[in-house]
Image (tube, rainbow, N blue to C red; front, top):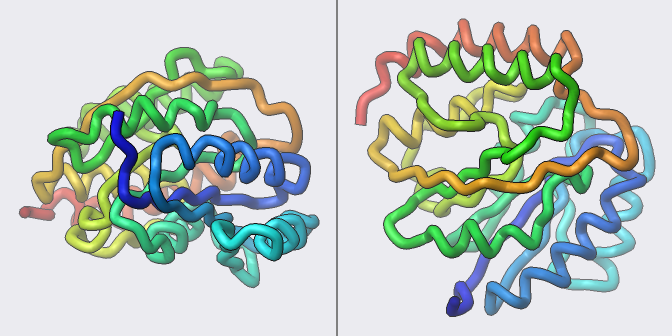
Length: 236
């Protein structure tokens, strides 16, 4: 496979001091195999630990690394929007900063670029408990019924998309977990082509996940209700 001209990769992060260094350094080892130029961005969402300090130290040693910092915690959606807006190259990839995805599988995403505007991962086997899996299935069903969004894994945190998708769709509004669905619904309604690839999902080694937090889930449903009229009536 020939190398891409340039790709931006970003990692949303909140209190990931135990994971972020390995995640960033691993990406830096892999990206030269697939891109002639690249950048690695960490979006620090108001972390209260040493996440920002660690990334800042890394960026002093490597010009490919950048950090985008939120003064306060705003949510996963806000981190995604900051990363998408801040990325400078024509292709943008993002994945979780906790090391639960094997970033070397970015090659599988890049293999699917022909004819695709977005390449999105779906977890072959989720390394989580039954409650997270149950919630995900219910969320997918709801988005399929309400918006016709029929993908295998809406919230899989491993995606690759063209810069022009973000430049073309209506501005993302969600600051919470609704953001992945909002992105895919808007892209689909604007006529962009989506391809799906299977990805490996690994157990979290350090830190605590927030996706199953009832506050996070409640916020996602509130955002769905708020955005429903706009998304339902959106046309290309």
